[in-house]
Image (cartoon, rainbow, N blue to C red; front, side):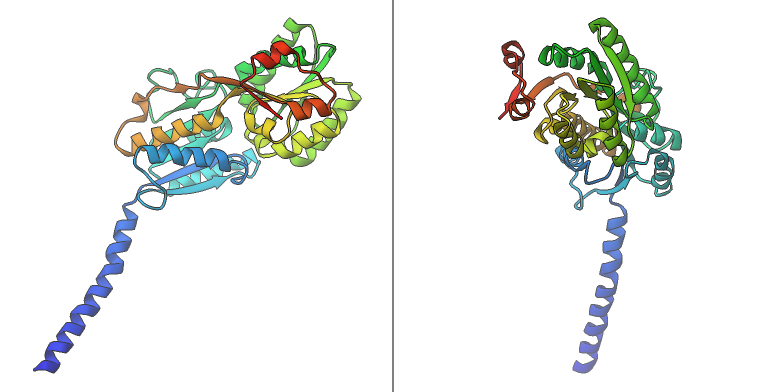
Length: 330
């Protein structure tokens, strides 16, 4: 009799062990999956991905615990974004977080059903992402840093730092067509107002950047602006190093460039925008509709000056410019 009892207990135990993995797998399949789509390398976007996860956690979602994140990176090749967005759609992710303007446009073209939360430096109405900021409607909303509208202010600050410069350049990525066009338009208008000659220079690969700096030297460019773009952010160390090698003063759109050795930056906190995007994704996972969530805009701008780099270039930072700086890196 005892033998039968032990055998029955053994069978029950085996049955429980067999059922438990199935239950665990069933629980895992109910975990929502978020697709994180970006045009640059994932390593280059690591600070922004971390800020996104922070925002997501503020709504109660922690990666690996109650939400999964699938990352898709175009590795600087924007023509891959359409296929990557389609892959996330086939994966039936719960929400697509589109990092950057090209990613946002690719995600919008890929689905009208899956909610999309974008982060862009462009005007989302002007480039056709949403019809209205206050009530975007449909399956899409997000955060805008309006980086392109900062170009005029950036050129003005650069002129204050290097007042003798008469020829400037703006670096744009032609594969980010909407962002490149709006940046070029704003930069040309600002250059006319400031009375300086302006060259528009293109780069979309690491090797392009070497050629751009050689071209600026030939054109006798005295200072330049780096337009907002995910590819440039991912190559910030290379760009800052080339600028130092050519002794070429530049202004960038986020602090991370100045921290990498760039001369100065003026713009909003891009990481802050990604945190807000993470919060929106969490709210959508909790049942809110993206079309009811107004597009948020970053409103705090910061000027950062790298004094060590200025000294390397032999530049004296005007007291008036230093006085308005939010941060000076020694």
